[in-house]
Amino acid sequence: MTLYEKELIRRSQTGDWDAFELLLDRHRSALARTAYLVTRDRESVQDVVQEALIQIWRDLPSYRPFGSFRGWMMKILLNKARKHYRKRVVETVALETAAGIPDNDRSPEEAAELEEAARHMRQALECLTENHREVLILRYYSEFTIPEIAKVLGLREGTVKSRLSRALDRLQQALTDPEAHGRGGKKR
Image (cartoon, rainbow, N blue to C red; front, side):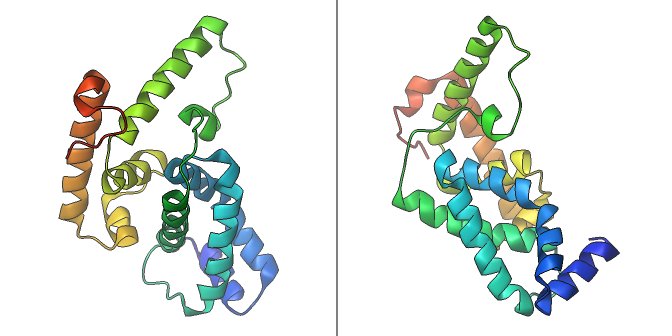
């Protein structure tokens, strides 16, 4: 955490909305990307992020800068996204679209191949448990370190490593043998 970010946090804790906006500008895209990857519902991302930001604003006075501010915010967002995901499961869009990778330079064949690969990946991710999906999302899409994931999820680092290893194994199995996991079924 930079000195500038610490100052923005301190000012935000005293009710400075402008400082809070500047602070959020640094994290908004990561929050939105993570919300999408957890809910798999593009239309709900804004609502989930908004709910999380309201909670962050309310809880900010009690935040103590002993850990990562980004991790603290992500934990709040994950709780909101989990709640939303449990309420509603909808059709998803390609992961690369959620990550903001433009496809306007691709040929129609490349775009079709990429869409098929993304569909295959979504189906494989559906085979994972929520715990396994979360550690993968935090590690590879939100680019959290193992210690950061442990703090966000309230787990020991060894547990995070174990879940990550199992998640990668199961993801690989699902990608290489989708029939073994059934449609929507979770093999544990």
